[in-house]
Image (cartoon, rainbow, N blue to C red; front, side, top):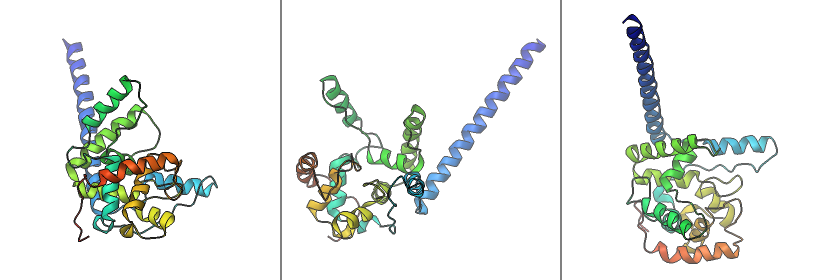
Length: 238
């Protein structure tokens, strides 16, 4: 009887420790996401890694630009990114199960593997997680995506994405990409330039929007018509 009582106490102790740890992680991550929604982070993990690589002479110098509000991005760019990366952005809660189903069906039929990450998932990955591929990171991506969708608005998620997405060696965010590739501000991008920028997002270190390959041009041809069908996220007078 005494042995059983000790086992129960030990079991309760470990359960309480686990619950306290779970509560601590939950509160910490909720606080983290909430603060990032109010204070624009000057650095993200990919940018820090890029600066380290640059310091070790193993990469390009990261280009830094001031934070750009969503409404100050070209409406063409906002539509192009959704057309390219996440056409159901406003309709899902972080996970596009329709796209995932299409990917699985394509694989079953012998098609090529393609990503099904939403803009919310990509933002969670960029803002909060390390780059190594693992099941633990994938779990973290799912978890942070749910937090983003619960705490942030769709407008805020897209704003963070456009300000921090990787657009080539040392190039982070649409403003840096617009200046680098088209020598203009992100607000002034026309439809063709926006489609080119969106077309290289799946492979920004393989393709360049100012020197499009045949594959990039084919993607642009698909993106341009879709831009007229996706909604414009964020108010604009344009």
